[in-house]
Length: 329
Image: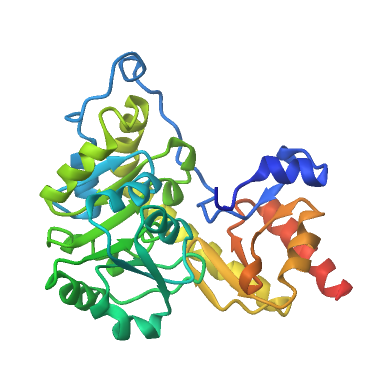
């Protein structure tokens, strides 16, 4: 298993701090979970059905014709390699590590490429995977550039997979509306923007034939009845979407200003997290953890990802810890 953010139980044991006493900024989730409505008893008592309205709600929300619900976009990441024969896969890196891992495990030749290297290697690849906005760097690529890459790949029967897990705050940058094209596959995560990662829901947006093949790999009843009901409610809440986007953007700007105030200069960001490269990343991670503040450490490139604080008390706590770090440095 690869390392991920959000391993709060492990941190609580390691540092001897109760889980409820932590400020967890490690996961890149919106810190304001959607209110959970009362779920109808039938959703718990019966097997889920696929004509209950979830797919249509997803199509309306993402602006597409076809959408396949999956138990978290991670499920699609692991299953997509089954739909092709062996070949060469490029992954724009650094990014969410599960992408390269899934293709390697399936026997593909995987090359991790930098943004400026994509055009050079693209014609030798069968699949290109791009996370947009990228996790953890926050890099956002223009839709036109992605669609140009897709066109070059599609001419040879190749795929462009775009993981848009952090796209909800910037829908104008999404290529979801073009996912009806053969060879363009878009992954969307539900839990990050809606702050409900525990429900395990994601969507694959692509042309109908590919979605049918992927659905066979996913199997029946993969998304639970309660999750399907909750997903519909959240996806239809247009007023809630506007509120969430606004407070994410405001919190992201506030966090950037706060870090700058303490001589920490983020190299990348999106609406749900900031990315900081510093030669003292491990020391800062440890310093914060000892104070019950969990950050996401990327030791290989000495960087940290900061999620958004959710309450006034969280902001005060983070600022006090940053002040202590500056005084100790």
